[in-house]
Length: 131
Image (cartoon, rainbow, N blue to C red; front, side, top):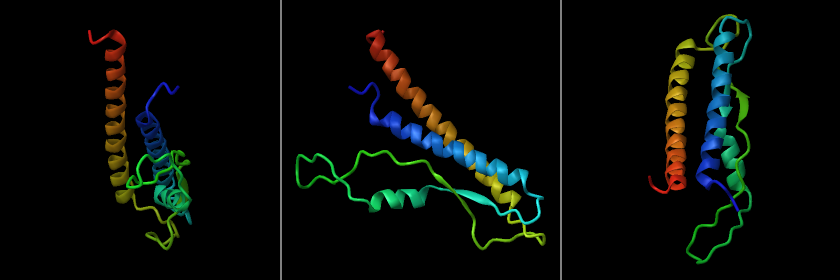
C-alpha cells in the first residue's frame, strides 16, 4: 500500500529538477569570468523524449484509454549549451540570462513547495478527522 499518491512523486521529481537547475545556474554564475568555461543547462526535455519513446504498458480498463507507464522519470541531465559564445575569452555565460533563469526557477520552486504544503495540509486534515 502506498502512503502517498502519485502527486507526491511528481512533485518530488519536479523539486529534484528545480534543485539541479539551481545548482547549474549557480555554477554558471560563479564561472562567468572563467576563460573558456562553457555554460551548462539542465535538459529535462531530452529525458522526457527518451522516456516517451520507450514502450509503455499499463493496465487499461477500456481501449479508449491512453496507454501510460508508471515508471518514474530519471534525474534531469546536465548538458553544455552548444554553439554559444558571448565573451572574447571563450566563456559562454550570459549573466543577464542566468539571472533571469534564476528568478524563473525560484518562482517555479516556490510554486512546487506551495503545492506540496497544500497536499500535506490536506493529509493532516484527514488524519485529524476534519477538525
